[in-house]
Length: 167
Image (cartoon, rainbow, N blue to C red; front, side):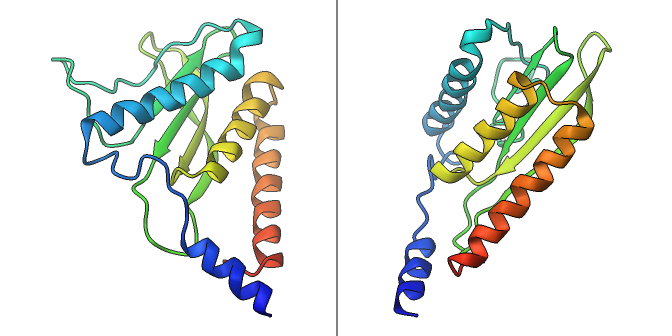
């Protein structure tokens, strides 16, 4: 029982990365660079060419700075894309992490299969996002298999949380 209380206390003190990203343009840019480094490292061995498919700046080049998306990329050869939505951290015992599949349209009108990841950024959610991007891009799971994989990861995350006594 005492051990369980310690885990809950630690959980309340979540380690959020780039906490003030919506308030500070410099922190926002550092966060975008963080995601860019992760994605480029993940796909480096495959030599995929990535491009943005959602505009993150207005016509004058000013960044929207709203976290939706904080980062996005498409891989034309796979007809797949990824959008990462970063939410402002809330002080709760539960860290936001959700993922789903959608369809997106590129600038040239091509329909893309899209993995959407919405999260509050922590080391844990970074690892989960990397795992899902790996399955979607490098393992090249079909939409059906990826949907099942997302459900599996979500179920495992919930089971682990219940085992250690957190929400």
